[in-house]
Length: 549
Figure 1 (tube, rainbow, N blue to C red):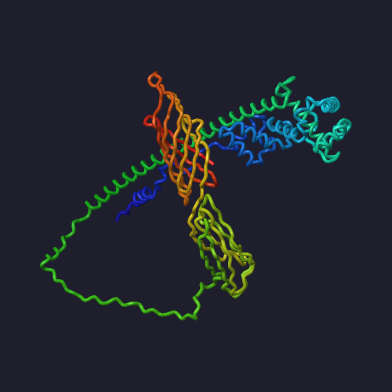
Figure 2 (cartoon, helix red, strand yellow; figure 1 turned 45 degrees about the horizontal axis):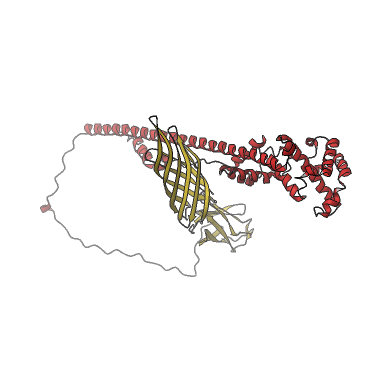
């Protein structure tokens, strides 16, 4: 007897079991511009030093806020945020000039604009010139009040000159006593030195050496740096997104080719198996024909009476007999889930079945699967370290957000005593109501902006961008409508609008005014909306990613 070949059968099973998603769109999320990276580009381009070199890298929240303004095209706002962020940082003259100029302005407001209008104050000019002659150039001065108060030479020179300012500062409420007046005077002279140094750096001379003109020069420089940072980060994100899409396309093509190879191999094996089967049949000797079956009229039917089915006897269990427990089992437990607001509360009761104490008792919990917007935790945690014989303890655990269930692990006596998993029973209801603004990007797209409003399950909004290729350059504008799923956080919408601009066709120039339409999908996660979009006209189609918050 020949052996049956199982390879074709197994190969067929593999093909049947291959998930549909193997040849679908990639599950990885699209690449969008990173606010923190945009802020890094901004600060590095403006100062020549990275945020890490300036000691600013730990302030991720502030950096993200600055970067968001950069990516939105709010270059003036980005400069203002950076200035306010760095104005109080003790990082010396390597700080962005926008931060230094705001620090000088703040000092001026505190001391009756004395730090801003020093040029007209002869007495203060006298102090400043004396400090230059005695201490040296501003670059050699202490950079902060704390350093100045510790520098005996600087302090001695300052003390000999500033005394006449005490009355002025105290009478106008800028200092309560002589000690405070001394600190204010030190702050003023340091700010004055920084002001003069910046004027030199930006080439301001004579009547142009004013706070207002210096501030304008500094802000223009900062806004230009912000615009360059935005272009750089947008280009980086678009390049990475294009690489991601190309990689995904290559993987899909390879998977499709692999599937074709498997199908061809299966067909060849099946053909060989069929040929082998035919050969076996051709070699098998003919058997004698069986006796023909009786004709219908020759069949005798004997009617039999079916016996009734016997019902099993039920034996009622005495109420005073306890249920048998598994031999050697130490703990018993019950877990009762109940639904709450966006969470499931698990009421847990654990009982010691043994005749000895369970020492070092603990319970750990974990999600039964992956989750993106939720968590696990305790309502009332198991604080008992020892459970006596026959004793029971109770506590509660929580599964929040999109956590599908909890895995409980019970330990005691130095080992794991049991585990159990229970599914969550609550229904998610995500509230994403609000207005969101962000960016859209894609092949040929620049300056893309997105506005979206979510109210309950209704989604409305608008998009605007520019699209260009070798043959056309058009402005895109449109509105979108769709729905929001409060259970999954998914967004599905369609959009429609127009493209207007210029087109070159066969060397001739034409005006473009054509309708557009497309779709937009995304997900709401931790206060941020993000996803992908597609669309175009009868002649051009494109797509990409979007993000809003």
